[in-house]
Length: 467
Image (cartoon, rainbow, N blue to C red; front, side, top):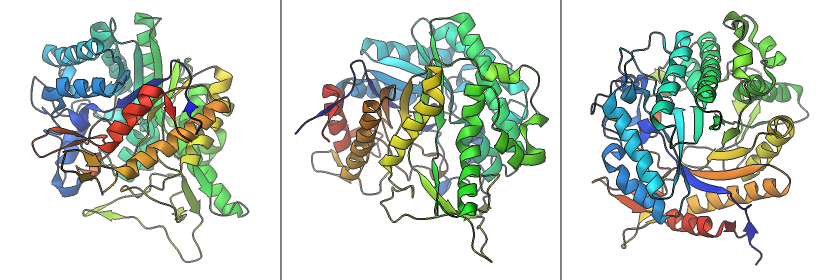
């Protein structure tokens, strides 16, 4: 059987985030983040769990790096806990900075390139107003400057933000994520300040090191109308695509928010918070765009008398994150789903990559990297030899890599794939009940390789997959 080969130099790795794996919540001078605060809200997290210990990567990072080396990975994307490295008075915390310096050294000694994400949702609690404050964007640029000053001699790839849509729309519109607000106007304000923070951080990093590779990672939620001939369904899909995807892509690549989305938002639009120079800063050229993809959804307009429900989750009423289309009804396509309830749609990844190449990154000459892709399943089975059987996850990863390879064959400038995630971890509002790792974790926090880890090791070794 013919094998599909990925291009020479294609990066293979995994990704994690600080809050989900590090633990050591009150160790070494770390102060609380908004996620520590959110975990204390009754009903916010499944099972009332928190990430105070998580999977203790803070103390076990050497073990985790050793596993990456065994798997043959060449790249590891991790995030920095802002509240671990900067004190509330704005001074650096040497103990926190030393942890990341030791982690980077361990990675380099193992032949693994460190890829640093500055922000993966764990905003320090002490920042007044959070992302509703314009000042936070400037504090973020200072944070970027600090981290480059400590690690810039060894870290060559920098991501400013991970999934700003989640930070803005799940954090401030739906209430599902920290800080748990349900105000559409706040979500639009937060989104702009997040993007401004990105732009200011890009400028700071480039000023410190013109040769550094700097990008941003967006999570994409491709959406299709249930009936392509029904104007209402088509318009709902357009509106959701507008806030989920184009609201971030357009200012980054064109220097303007999409006109139709601004019109949809009406008085909630970003003109309330945009100041002179903001969009020029946001649209500074990128060296790469990170793509996080998990699923594609299908929506339709409500039928007469039908209303979109506001879900009651653990005693908390959540709102729709789709602030211009809260009435949208999600349609099941009767295809397999993961434990998250997300439909498995590798073809959606192919369509997304080719769209990005055609409409955004291709014209700008910006390469793409898949910075997250993976699945949580409920049926991981521990075998007598200590390994974990997770054939569903292997099938998911394989299908998405095949879709990615087709995109490359069709001209998409895709240069790497980072599986989510290295290890089972704290999955935000789902607590520890959703497992994405290719390494499992037992009750003593020992790492256990799943079948997917062995499978991925072979893919990495050969840089090939079977069609």
